[in-house]
Amino acid sequence: MWVKFAKAMAPMMHMPAQMIAEMVKSANKGPCRILDVAAGHGIFGITLGQKNPEAHVTALDWPNVLEVAAENAKNAGLSGRYGTLPGSAFDVPFGTGWDIVLITNFLHHFDVPPARRSSAKFTARLRRMELR
Image (cartoon, rainbow, N blue to C red; front, side):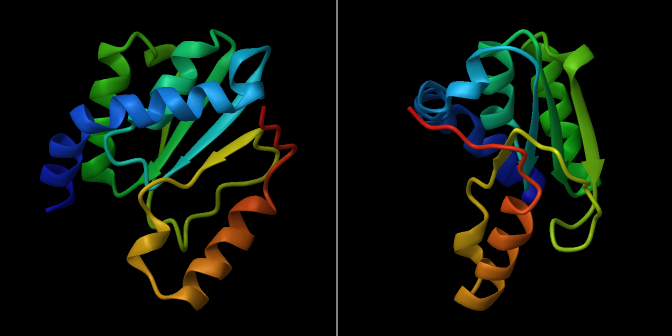
């Protein structure tokens, strides 16, 4: 189900991804580590990676869904700067020191308490966050 969803949503997410990339200052300059949580199609992380040739994007999602994101990253020319982290966003250890953590199309699937816990977990792993 999520593979079909990821493939179907990708074309519709290019414009929102461009808008996010324009808002995030650190996406456009210098070395940058980006974690794309529940990446699905990967378009959000891929777009930020395209804006910054020094960015490295890591997509976190279920293994079969990551195949869609990895293919999209390859087609976008990001293969060398795009990694995958298979597993549940709730359970997989993903370290610290991220410059950007993308949590798009994810939290609305859950009730408020787990969404708050997840948000706190992800933002605690940030190195910095800058918006224009």
